[in-house]
Length: 168
Image (cartoon, rainbow, N blue to C red; front, side, top):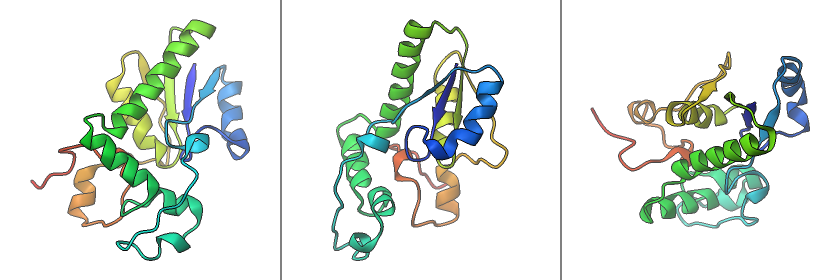
């Protein structure tokens, strides 16, 4: 069983060429939208004095803006309530695994992430038991230490964890 995690949620028609090679390799594929992404995105744009250009961006870029986007508000609030968003996304994958195991009864699971979702897929493989990460040739898992060292202002907000960024 392969859990497919896409950059903007579950697999779409543009993912079919990549999905076909895994289908041909014998994988059954399950793809989900982690909460707040894909079809479960909150359907509005934020306006913020912190980022005056936010309202002029296309919906996808404005939604995930780490400065003051809608997803950023959700992520910051999740940290304040003690249920960090990254851990919620890992939980979403675990729920999908349990569902697939009950319905399809597969003992072995693999996970793959495209684009920025590679960070989630590698974190899932590190965290959950009995799931292996399928490597992507050009994929890179985001690391907070790299963002801090490079003094990046924009970074993938969905991977924020308390204590995740530190100076060493």
